Image 1 (cartoon, rainbow, N blue to C red):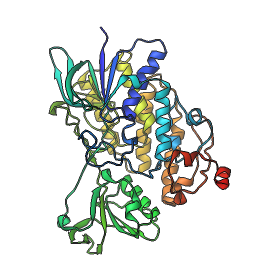
Image 2: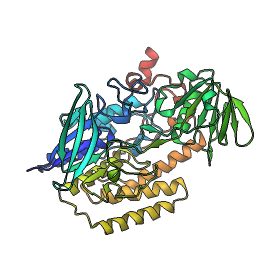
Image 3: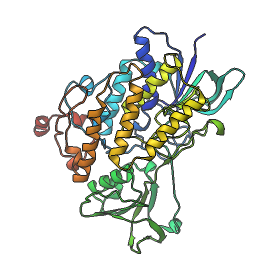
Image 4: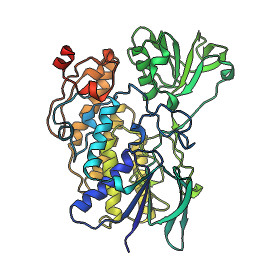
Length: 453
């Protein structure tokens, strides 16, 4: 009897797992029976955009935190699939920082080519998971949202690929309930147009604060202030943008900061991160971690050490994204298919501790890039995933950090060379700061066509 594999989530990680099994099947290997459950009506996870906030069509909490006008905040050359290049998909060079619709098109291209959609049950959410010792299987309670139907299925392995950028971490500040303006978390942000001529306060010093800040500046905010808890982002901000220490409290529309300053704002956006939240898992199976480069309790960043039949994908803080999810999925596949034998629990914990100690020694962003490069390399080298020159990718990541520090408003106009194909990226026809249309059609136009239009 074939093994049954359940996958929760059809975002980049879940799709990577489907692609990994499809790759084995295309080489003539027998693969397990696979079922992937996706609570949205389409694949792509966070890369799906919806105007909705709060709850969706069937009353489920909105999963995605995607917003209009999002452009890649890192070079596409750092996330390129090894087995499906940008050249193959688009047939010509494109710029290094595409907008969301273009990247989503690329993600879809690979999985459409491999016909993995048949494995996915859309509008289906996991309600509860129980591991049964007698059968050594997971019993998963599922809900077909479109038909309001609940049912149960059994699986030998369960792969959690539901991500960790969906459940907001929402802090409280004294007086916030009396703030008369708009208050939201970055999860509910859908576009900076609403901030035109407004004074905006962003709480946090993460990538979302940085990007929502520059988006707000680009779309005409009167001023943008970023409030940090411990360390500022530290960019050379343009006039109209600044960083201040942590917010302490509100008095009406006035925000007070820990350095004694105060200022009036029209809107507040909490860029305060997300929780690893798995409400469908019992306590003993739930990964409990903050956002970090190497969570404890999962071997090779993938296998839940107390029960290796439970697999977590994409749970790390990330420099690498699509290609890291791939090597995790390839590694998980090979363990499931018996090509890789896991060591015993104590040996696995020793390996986890080794990586945790390495992570603790990171002091700079460059250190973190080198750490995750080493991690991706270790998994890649144990599977048949196509080779990537990771040292060159690491160089690109470090150049990206330098470019942002040099010019936070124009780094997206830089171009790089593909590690996979050697193709030089094309300069986008319009500088990012001037490009107000993020549609696929606009992006793919050539400059002469724009002039004629």
